[in-house]
Length: 235
Image 1 (cartoon, one colour):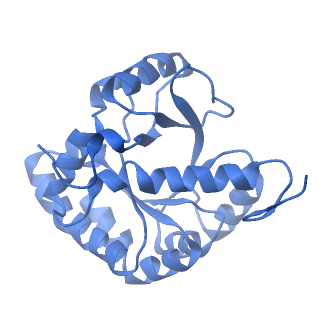
Image 2: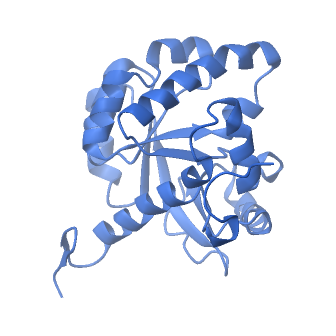
């Protein structure tokens, strides 16, 4: 059982990455999230979903999958003010570098495949760029839960290096489920315990509470009417 971090009961938890296969599955996913103890969830590629279920904060998120740097820039110009969370799935080094330094990107995501991640994983340069751009690095529990023993043995050392890169450059680490259906969802304490396979020093409860909420609050301020710069609004 995970015991790290501040008092568990004092935290507000959010699963920042849920990927229902169809809009009809959203209600069940939200019900499950409440039961598991989450106060907020981000639903991928569904806009204006706040208030979809009383008692849980629903956050809009989009996962961009750009083919190249130009495609990334074009997509960011189109969607940045339409979603509260903008994540980029980095399928190449040029895309990863560009995404890490772009202030419009909230979260960097990488393939669950160890062979791909060895080539395109979260390295020192991306960590340095992300630190300057206030961009977060996300770990999806489903990337671990969905692996067989051999694949997992190859993926875990890569994840450890990436998390260490994030820590070294003070890049916020966000822990999400990445679940596509309720059966793959886990509660905050279970997620934190699972991540002990990667790093026992990091406070994984922060990664499923404080870190994601800071991103949501920052972006909601930016998207609010009259926003000029942080702390300044036109009234």
